Image (tube, rainbow, N blue to C red; front, side):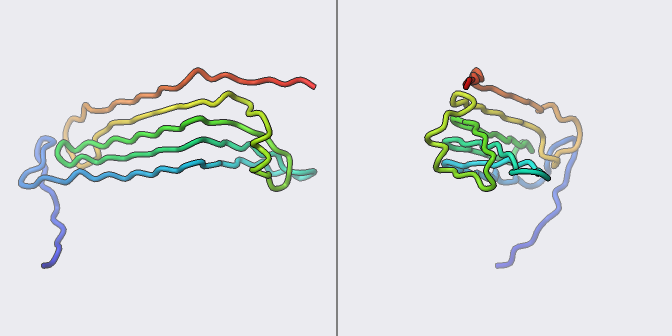
Length: 138
């Protein structure tokens, strides 16, 4: 058979004559590292390295009620600094993180743009552990 896209028909925020599927996109990264680097004209650049146990992102588009939800979770985030040209990521196991392992989660629920009319399903949530920093003196 052939597939043919149909334009939805809307009235007062409701879809007429069809039910849209629920679609999900999930990205799960285990042990990711994010390197933020400054550009230095004199001397080596300075980097901040964010290391975490895992990063989880989920987006769900619900066709039944025309809603969209996005959520992410960062588990055991640690922060390291480096002034080397290329940071040696294996040496970070011997260093102390600038913060204690920290976890944070967030979610956003909105209408997904397919419904016309009033949209009253906007919801924003953010939660996380208490952020504790470490200090060292030499």
